[in-house]
Amino acid sequence: MMDKDRSLLTICRFGGEHGWGHITRCSALNARARSMGWKTELVTPSEIDSIDRKLIEAFENATPVDRFDVELMLGGRDELDVVLIDEMYIEDAYYGRARAIIDRYPGARLVAIDDMRQRSLDAAHMTINSELGLREAAYGSDISLLGERYALLRKGIGEPMAIDTPNWGISIPVLVMIGGTDPLGLTDLILEGLLNFESVSFAPIVVSGDGNCRASIEKRLDQFEVSLYKEAIGASELSAWIGACQFGIISCGTSVFEFAARDTPFLGVIVVDNQEAVAGQVGALWNLPIVSGSEIVRSQSILNSPLSRLIGKLNRWSEKSFAAVDLDGAKRVMDAITRL
Image (cartoon, rainbow, N blue to C red; front, top):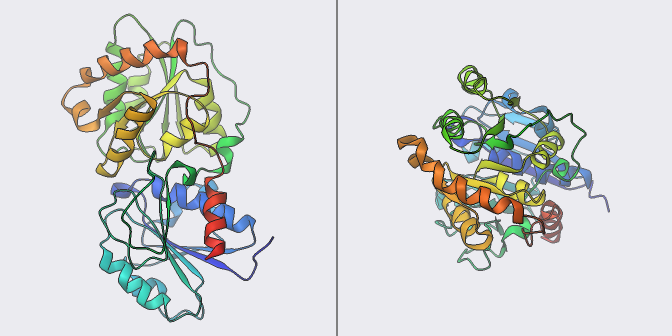
């Protein structure tokens, strides 16, 4: 059923210190909403032109603002329907101010996406936290959607495109993807760790969101027999490369669910603190190795033990290992939002 009279307004920051995971999952949800006939809008102080074309297509309109002020973003509108806020550190008071504005519009609803469970979010009508294994949380919102069933994955992850893969030779193909911006410069350190790993050779495929440190990364890649560099690729191409690799080395954000949907094991890297809960569950529920990005910065040799552990699992990775992860999270969330 098409919901042409409904609208979804998304508030989100991205790039730089904010990374790309938040806008990626918001794009996935908005793409689902738009396919249902909803009007979709992104309001952000971040640089809209920096968003990948496939991500921005989910938004019918993208409105730039000069500061992250909720009154500026929401005030003065003729109508509001559903407002979605995806922010990592903004305090509860910000949501309270948003709710005060939203309540002026009959039937309007506030939806929050959260990661760390450090806020009550009692001003929200609905809270979404797709943390792996999460079944209970003390949110004050009317409704809470919890766990990996609500992971917001892009449609293209389930539709891998055809790609030409190189001859890997005796090397193990591994996809390295440390978030969109890699603020700690971990990609180069990880590649160094792969080069120095004894007894096994690797063929790394590096996927970068914004091309940060491209020159130094490509210089490092030249030291491998086989390597590839990919920048700002779409979900369908990313899905294809995930499937072409034997494992990944990835940040513990949205990528965790993308790899799970493709049934590809990985070594998880904690890049920012909102990834710690997911990383803990990846280790506990899926028995996959985890390493802290700060530890890699201190010494890339910290990768030796988790790499050895993961390589030992590869020959046994034949059955579906990622229970409860599928491509229907955005559908489930939009169904719940529609019921609001």
